[in-house]
Length: 209
Image (tube, rainbow, N blue to C red):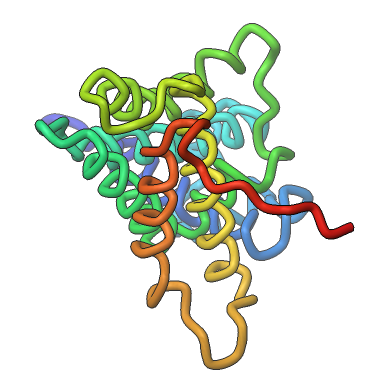
């Protein structure tokens, strides 16, 4: 009779999500492999077998957050309207964050979970950033975005807007009586519209200081 495989992917995923919740609520210092095993109703042997040690668990946690985030953005397929694609990517960003707040915090807020080396950092940043940059670059080629700035700069402004608004939601800091959900897509659309203008067309404001 074949021996049952107990240290499988289902257990690995259960441990990762429980570990993410612990880190999100109490920080990396509170993450104990023994307590994690108890919470997941498994053995410490299983945890060590799957991750090696705490550092291996934290690294796997970060990589899982990256994997799911990249997969969510990859689900937004390029269309003939790159400007709309940028907005759809921004919406996917918010959907990922709301659906996976623990993993989102690990990916974009808690750098104590994983501190990539100088060699790894460019690859990881590029992997998460590329879909948005690619959409902006296609938009520039189609005449939808100004060519006065690089696609990376335009993409960063969209990313920053999305990150700021999402952070208000996840931190519980939305202003009383106001909801980010009511303005999120409009904010993205306004930003995209602003980047359609060349520098010579953009409105200028008088310095009143």
